[in-house]
Length: 413
Image (tube, rainbow, N blue to C red; front, side, top):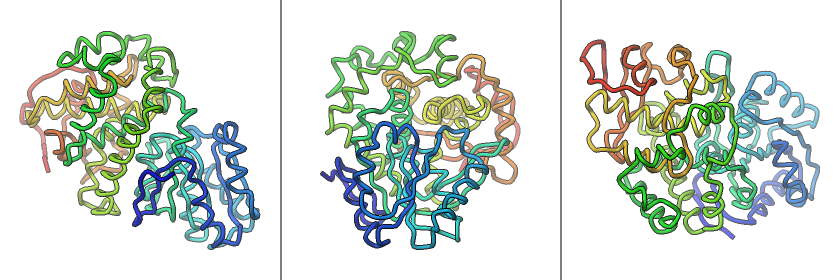
């Protein structure tokens, strides 16, 4: 069953739709290489075996995890491609989450200057974000995604069956990117998202916290205790994540498909206007990401990307508030949304803000030697700011507020 298709970028969202791979396999006369996350293979080996039952298919199993995004892993993939006799007609199938897609995308883009790439995202984050737009990359000790290319896949097949076994931590990671897409959208996605929460989850606590985000966060599902923040920072998953909500969301296919489709359409719209992230509107997709990447680096990548993005959006909103450029009261809406769905709204206790700020020197979004932050002014309206003083960043990371003094070299564009 197909729920949504974008023909230009060959993005297909559906259920039980892996037969869409048949065309690529016929074209390659049954040859190809599957690179798959080990956990996905463990859970879905039968499904994968059936999808690739015909032909001569090589297979390579990835360990997964952000720490596997390194040059050694790319070299290992090159060796495997050579072992299987890959040529420029051999499709590479990336099956897994965002890390798998990033690694395999870079290897496929650079081996023999480009092999056909097929993305089969199996996490919510990969379905709505990382599989789309052609970006791939690996990390260096100095920072995240510092080596990479733009290389669009020939085909993206998102089968929501894979979400049936998605760990609750991965649900929260994917929802963070959906919420980012809602906040930057000019089509009213944020209001539609909130309306859906009202319609489908009003009885599960959404309504009782309307207009009272601080009280809601204090309940422990948004602003985390020091102990819980530490657990989240190490990637732990326990009962404070609203597991029941995620299960309800998966069962509610109508709302789930709405969320995925809306986030995908928002990203494809911006990618289409600015394919290489070269000064056009694609920058909007980096809302909260400068902060998020610095938090990931400071935590040695123990803080998952999606949860870092959730915190990053709060910090970006706080920066806009401190700079006096926020045009509407977004903070309560964002805290309520993030907190309700089990995402943190503050920097984890014990994380070294100095290490986070220091890592900004290697952020790939820097402009003329200055860090660039994408911050919201209102729902559907974001800008880039740069020239932020270190003292203000310290206050932002530590959760304090003061009005911008006007010193330094602030630029808003």
